[in-house]
Length: 474
Image (cartoon, rainbow, N blue to C red; front, side, top):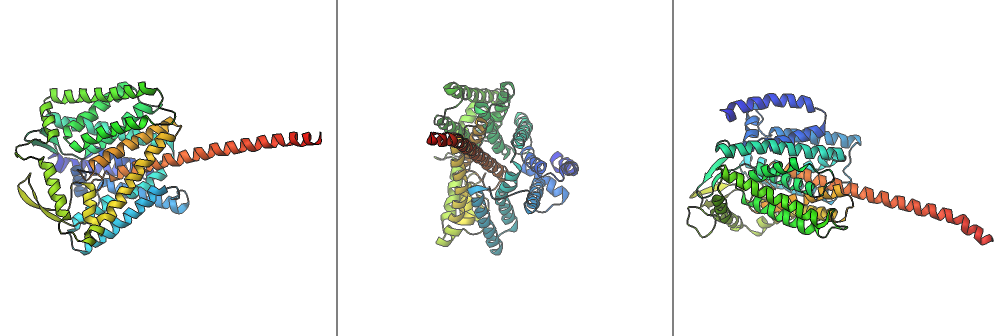
């Protein structure tokens, strides 16, 4: 009753109040949109959409469209510019064009419009990069963005944990061997916020106090455990390991030296151990069930994990029967495949694929895979390079946060559609914009230092010139 009746009514009333508060401010609009994505599940956002009678867009999507509209007005007025969007901006434009063409092909092919529209609008959220880049041109706004994401994740994490503690609520499932699992996409946002928090604790001069940061880190880890999402578990481990290795090669080293490395790893390890122990002690998921989840155990008596087997079958179905043109350009957004899902014991027809790059391969072919892969590969290289070279420690901490988040997302995208099918695509676009904004500021500071150096050299030359001239006369 709460989810079907009360929540939509409250959401509709709150939406009117929120719109009155944020009208005219693109930055506040975007903050509210991202907060809604973290605080509410996809099902809750859809319930609000249904209650208000919006057939196509969720409340968060409407706010993002409004924010983009205000950016376009600023662009026309000359208050915004797209010239500093960099190579990432160019790649996002190219990928969005591929999405638009593939959506047109999907509609022309007669695929179910619901799947075509949902996938197309989600992938087009990478265009949020441009208004976000405009809005993040100020350090103070970056700090506000970080605090909003952190507070939103804390509130959503508490609700998430209570669901696991009570064993009831939307998304709560029970698996045969690995016990309780909450199948909510919010865990992806928790993982990103956790990694950005660890990067700030490691490097940022304005890092939060441990008395606040450690409990938050424990909460995020506990939520990741309860989500039972192995791709996120592996992604966090890979990201922390990559950050450790990258930190060894930073120009000028990391403040605090090896002691800082050991301290942050100790905090991360202790937070993980305490969170896992708490989840087990409270009877939410036992350590043996966690181990079973890692091993892929179950009641199916198969030599391979049932979830992986289902994905392999779906991926093989995509390749099976695909001609050269379909492999190159895909079948159009909304294309469906029919395959046997062993976990359900039935044949299913679906347009949504587990695995971001396999989803793109089905819909947009190798051209789309290359476009999406280039965006994240370039961003990964740029974030690592910025961390290694910038003398600004605050900027280095932000670059490291983005670097770890990208590692996490790329690992998770191998088994889930986190880069293509979730509304968090808007949040990933904001992370990319944050990276480009920091690169722009780094370039400005470098040019400023070079300009000061040139002026100093010119001034010295002018000072020496009379001396040289007089010396010539003498």
